Image 1 (spheres, rainbow over the protein chains, first blue to last red):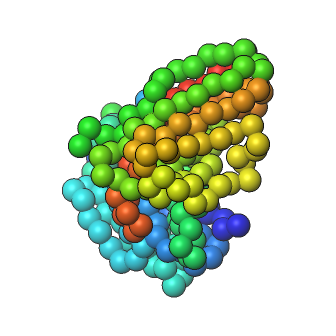
Image 2: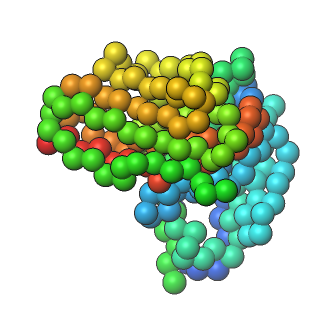
Length: 110
Length: 113
């Protein structure tokens, strides 16, 4: 099956700092999503981004499907950004077997 | 939109017992997914429904697991003869159609004694 690796596995930021999270995948995908799992375990969909660039406030994401990677940018980080960030990909073929990456655990300290 | 609702939030049971979880997707979302998440790992796909049809199942879904979505609305996930290894968070997600983002519920945390 498709392999999804994220880096870095852990990240500690000072409040206000910027960061870039990376997601590499081993095969072609139909779509890619970024999720934030907060410290209470809730999974929030951040972006649905099979290709191109999207922005939502302090967050933006870019997917380069031909090179099999996606980046999530967090600017001016806040303590509420803490949690685990997952990318999730869906392989082509019309099936919906979504594969989640290994996650990046982010801690933003005041 | 009231969001994806899952019940119960927590379930504690003895090994060997049967358990059933319920998921109510967002209204008019045709696709419904079940995942399992263990501590420190990302969610693992279990199965998904397009309306009432179960279209894909993971190999993780042994014959002790069964999922239904009888009227294309809510779904249930049943685990028979629970084992210690079934302890996990069971997550449900829904999406309006193919190519649309998935929205997750808060999950049901299962603990096997």
